[in-house]
Image (cartoon, rainbow, N blue to C red; front, side, top):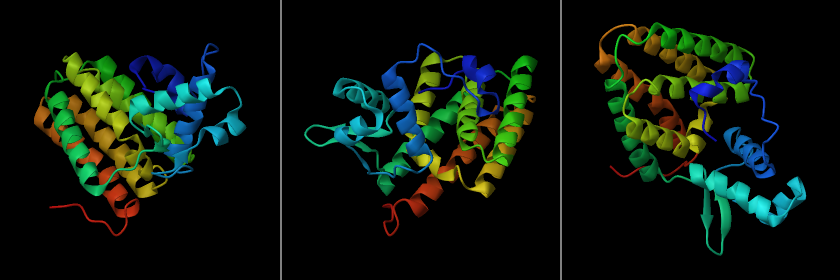
Length: 237
């Protein structure tokens, strides 16, 4: 379920067109992903095969294949003899995951050649303009897809392919956490402004500023998740 630079043209205003060759399990996985992103399925919610068969039809094999795809991204947990559930992060786990995510983002940003290629700057500016429009229209699918596309395109400038893959892995892993800010106007406004500032930094030569902003940028989702999704539980210090 990853967004890549090649998806950018189709992602304008969040109007990604599904390929006609999309498999049934891909569509099921996409629909369930939307339910998780938009809060219709909360962390810890069980994904029972019988209920999914009634909703989507098909076969148990297709349902299990779709759940396996979501399991690969980390937003669904599949346990033996218990089935699948939307991944729930405990407070300490959130802190640990984001500690790694921030480190990876910093290192990737530090390796982006600056000033960045003007074509890359133009591409990021166009994506962020569409992102702002989706925010104004409350187009949450567009907000989600364009946000991920913005970051995928920016990190594509990091020359270390292994580091890029790790950044994407932790971006996927935190999807259920990041989804908590989709309906928060103030956080979305701050997100757009951070994107704009990242673009300005990429026109300059100071990788440290860019790296620091990337780390700051991802913390809002972490803090909101800790505040709203695990009430009454405090992370260990």
